[in-house]
Image (cartoon, rainbow, N blue to C red; front, side):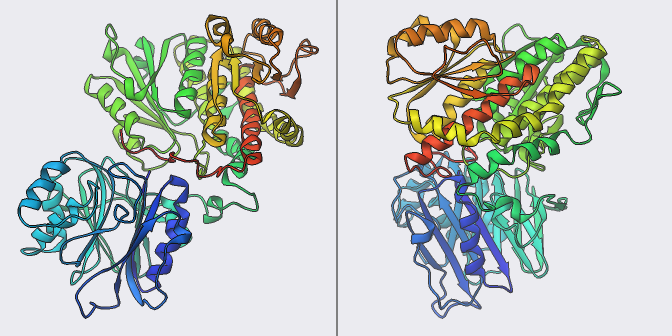
Amino acid sequence: MCGIIGYVGDDDALGIVRDGLKNLEYRGYDSAGVAVQDDGERADGGVRIYKQSGEIDDLELPTDVDARLALGHTRWSTHGPPTDENAHPHSDCTGRVAAVHNGIIDNYAVLREELSAAGHTFTSDTDTEVVPHLLEDALAETSLVDAMRRVVDRIEGSYALAATAAGHEGIVVARQDSPLVVGRGQGETFVASDVPAFLEHTRDVTYLEDGDVAHLTDDGLTVYHEGATVDRETRTVDWEAESAEKGGYEHYMLKEIHEQPSSLRQCLSGRIDEVGGTVDVDVDLPAEFLQSLEEVQFVAAGTSYHAGLYAARLFEEYADVRATAHVASEYDVPAGSDPWRTLGVAVTQSGETADTLSAIRKADRRGVTTLAVTNTVGSTVTRDADETAYIRAGPEIGVAATKTFVSQVATLAMLAGSLGRARGAIAATELSDLLGNVRSLPGAVQQVLDREAEIRETAETYADGDAFFYIGRQYGHPVALESALKLKEISYDHAEGFPGGELKHGPLALVTEETPVLAVLTEGSAAEATLNNVKEVAARGAPVIGATSRDDVEGYLDARIDVPEAGVLEPVVAAVAFQLFAYHVARLKGRPIDKPRNLAKSVTVE
């Protein structure tokens, strides 16, 4: 969602924050703004704010500011439309305070009414604007740090807050259910909602935790929790700034699609011993718990939910345990479940997805053992869950998830094999076969990427379809759902995914000659049965595009995308082909592929 970047130090604060905002564009936004304090307090005692709706490149910033402190924000609208007035930062009545905010303040209406009655004037529709006015009142009596403490005692909801005030040193921040990370350099300190904002300057980071209030100065960081000073670990980010750049590709999404072989190798590195028939994903759950396990519940949203659906079938097949996937926002511990014999698995790329965090906390309160599967070291879900498995895919900037989906499935497949072996559910040879399929993924994906020109030609042929239907069975079903999501996210075309057998139970009424049907015809997707569904749509005149490794589908397809064999993971290789198809359809239509309208990379509000 919204992006925050702040800087205190000896360098050009305004330039650093402007560049940081550009680095955060992938999160999705509709307005942007910056607050600066000049080197020393201005003569009129204020803080300069520059903000407006629209793109960061359109933001008019001064060239004559010698600032050593700046605070920037990109807003994704929740309270009030994207207007200049609603853009962040927001200020108080005196013009001495500037504040930015990610999240939602649930009790803002009550606070706004109270502050208005006390004489405060509001200029926006946002919930955020109560914060600088609350700070204004508190600063009449105390320091900026203590003022922020008083503010967080008053507000309810989720927030990542950052504020500065004329006459007060540095930037003060606070977090609750919305991420904030501090970057630490020599004589300079950064704060942001995500690491790429400042990664070209430092890789030494500290992740703040819920309830933290922190003071950033050029000398460093002081963190307070429940009134006491606390130490928070400093970590070194293990990927370079160049990893978050386009590297010559037209879009981040295309770069990340092509990064999948290397991301998968990184995901698998050091985890699989095919000769010994073992796999280790650094998850340490008690053997007695695994033996008594009766149910695995995956909770996730969007692309991660589709990975969870794929994993549920893997866990049932290879670990001999009942497994279900739940849309996180709809999750409740099912009646009849024994919490003490249930494993709750939160699948989330960012580790900050609000719906997924809420679901896994609900499971934890019921006594369920929890496991996080995430890409982000130090994220909130890693602290909330009992154990964590990292997918190690590297940074993903494009809003539409690609490489993280494939790495999620690979990680979950390894977990399924590990659990199955620990439970005695599969023989060593069966585990070896599964691990062999996992190990084949980087090469199989590369073979699909090598056929990009053919996939682009297919996209050019069918890009003008009225709607797009994706069908698949078994492991092909979550791939059909995920592939439809990719196309609708970035092309704005109507796309739906179905289990192949469901076509004749309603959706077939929508099939015409202008409705391309994309079918998963691979191992693990009941290809023969799906081929019958292909015949059904072909009889209605629909063109059919098949992703397949089979030879018995010739004559039934209008276009074929070859997928190499990869056992039960072959459908996920087909997903890569459909990622490329979606990308080229969207590119033909001139869509803003990395920043699709109304969407954000990390959804940190429920």
